[in-house]
Length: 133
Image (cartoon, rainbow, N blue to C red; front, side, top):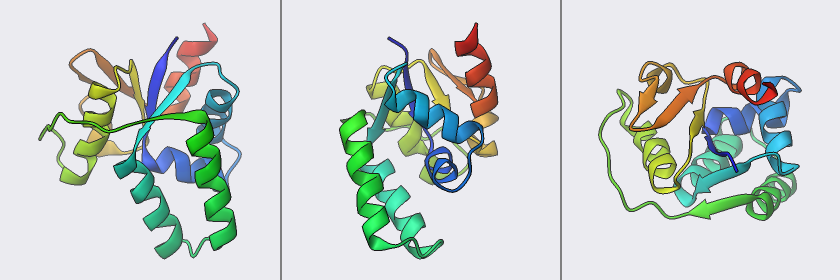
């Protein structure tokens, strides 16, 4: 089964808009591929939703419950320093230790890498194009 790490921005976009990021998360929840996250990614999602978007606490808990139910949560042990924005290295570590094929992101600091080891880094639209084939 295909395994992917959706970046924080993909998860947050999926909450607010019905576009391609929403489709990536929706199809992962439906079991078309495995969504892989780490506690650090979940913490960042919670932090951004609470502080940047003032997301209601009850809706936040509902989202976390859904992610915990439908995503594989791993605790990466590998440490990498390959991304311009050092906060994004947690995405690389999660993808590597989670044995994933793809990182799906809208973050230019990750997208500029294109690949890391055997992991392809691409946008939600590019990922959806690949799985449709």
